[in-house]
Length: 584
Ligand code: ADP
Ligand code: MG
Image (cartoon, rainbow, N blue to C red; front, top):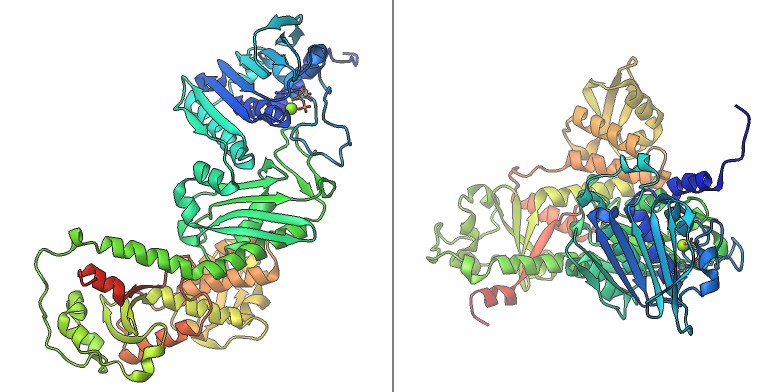
């Protein structure tokens, strides 16, 4: 067959395939147009997941009658004044209306600012109709019916009505987060109506979209580096989720999905959150448009930074700083939750009487004798604090007892502290390992080197990281193609399950292989090791061990959370306890 130029209609349908993937893409394009037109109110109506009907109405500056024809033409735009290097609008490709018109039945009605009348133009499967008068207030209304009727192949790829409706909601949420001053409503026969009233602040809109919980369980971020401004909210580690779906990034007001940005977020939380948990965040990056390429993707969902390292570094350091400052707040909120759980309704119906005779509480060996968990809370226990004066100033107080072989109870000057021994020990080992970077940590030689069976690629990966692992106290070498020989382990881990440790390390290294720098890599390895080396819950501690644990926690940074983001201790103030007993 000879080479031919494709007819305009076919070209538009091909383009439509790139720009318009599903109903949610149409909503994104049309709502972005409304925002670019300076709208303050945008109404979106959908039916049947957006396939039967999408209608977007705005109060923006509209389109003059004599430009309606151009608006639906491909590569026709009013937005690219300053060229591709200085894009300040959401649209710039001049493709959306043409693409939608090629794939569906589109009616574009508009009354331009200052004009007395409204006009409309229709496009059905690529054929453009005449301009006719319409009834409309100032602004623009775009109606799309029978989406993909002209490109039926695409229809087959759509998910259920409900899934498409949900994808539209997600698009509207993202746009709403980026444009708090605009009022959005999303309604239709296929959904529960959603309204975001115009908000005065980003915080207000973030709370409306992401929930009031996120507003209280997050830290404000505001940092500037070399002209790049990062702002927004980063969730507390304890508010982490099972997926990364609640992570929102905006670059110059444009919602983007960018692996580099999510990678930076992950890196910022490495110390703070479990590997299988994902932080919640809404982060806004604003920078000179000249330092950005937004013309990477037909749907404009990706961007390229001129200096990706700068943006990444800014995210990592700003969030880490906020997390370090916010650590104490985490434990505070949790203590409040604990108090709520202690509320009188849940108190036992009968008072608990002493079950063990009064005795000095910090005597060596006491821990072994505690049987009933309530014993430590008996009136006699409170009445006989054997805490010496020197201990009173200690933040975590003096260890009184261990309960359920899992928690250490300590008395402070003005309250009591309950420590999760496993979580606390894990954080301590982790911080010790991290401090050891640069000089080798003490190792113990295994009496019998252990051979661990592993897939060949894992063996290769671990062997390749051999020198780094050795620095952290783990000495490994390949043992044939499918096994690894472990001869030494970090001394501070004690007796450790070598197989479990090596397998987890292999997973971890496979995951971060290409994405992170040396320092982060070592931190993540340290995190895996710490988890394996920790004092297990259920191990009985001697009084001296308990005190040693508390003293080391006081001396360790970030000690209020384990490296999975769980708290290591909670604190109840005496005043709180008195309130529980109605003394205040
Ligand atoms: P782009 O947004 O990339 O310019 P579109 O195909 O989405 O391309 O829109 C083409 C043109 O139509 C826009 O440049 C704009 O001038 C006009 N337009 C589209 N939607 C609206 C709207 N809601 N209000 C005002 N003008 C609009
Ligand atoms: Mg557009």
